[in-house]
Length: 62
Image (tube, rainbow, N blue to C red; front, side, top):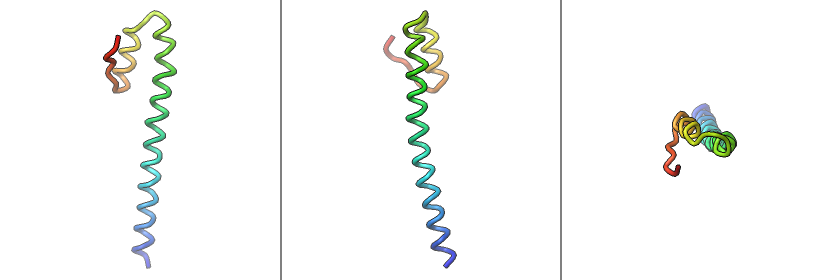
């Protein structure tokens, strides 16, 4: 009786973690876009490149 419940609980946690991971990727992408657009319109492509590099992205197009 205990084993199936434990398995279900683990599966549920894993599913939640996957969903949270997808949400985190989406949220991070949106934050990067929202922060990067003003700095593109402002002074600096360099500042934007540093920001993206800091967040783990590489900017190919300058």
